[in-house]
Amino acid sequence: VLFRSDVLLGRIDGDINESQQEDLEIIRASGIKLRILLDSALDLSQLATRDLKPGVEPVDARDVVARAANDALQLWAGKRKAIVSVGDEPCLVATDETRLRRCILVLADLLATDNREAAIEFELGHSEGHIAVSVAAVPSGRLTLDALPTPAEVLASEDPLKIRRWPVAVTSEVIALHGGSLYHGDDPARFVIRLPTAGVS
Image (tube, rainbow, N blue to C red; front, side, top):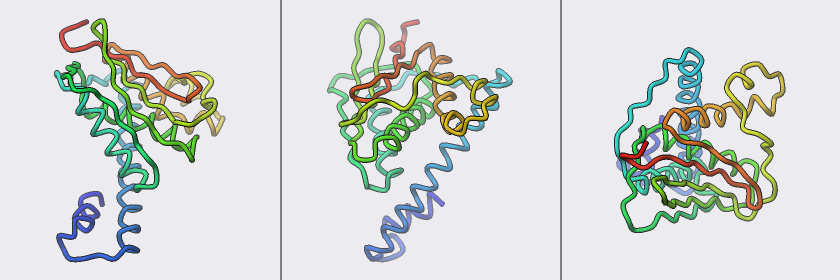
């Protein structure tokens, strides 16, 4: 679905009108959302059996954040603004690039869902052997998440709101497997991923 919609949006098979473009962007967004949910569900099952072992290699965190923001724009079918600030200096981090990008995307989409009028800001900073990826909704009020859920809590819960947060629970665990941590806060509503830079344990 993603490949075919990208082909049609790229006008490789011919011109499309405005209505067709809007429909194709919605189809592509649905495909991205489905891929995120399927990949997160696979990670959840591997976390439950302790079989999840991320493939870690040095990557430039600037590229990961920029690609995650681009994925987010496609997920939102161009109906929301993404602001990216990553700086000019290379910022190497030892990570599973695909999973880190998905983690950023999951957090950005939760903020976008809870703050429908907000722009989503992606910011990268680094100091003292760590990087910090901040994803914030601006303007926004309080985050509707009081505490980060764990996969076990999500699986045992009957609360629909908590169950809806299961991709965030997976994200928190995946970040921890990389030696990092996930924080959340308010004013603005935001998440911060903190990870050790490459070569730093």
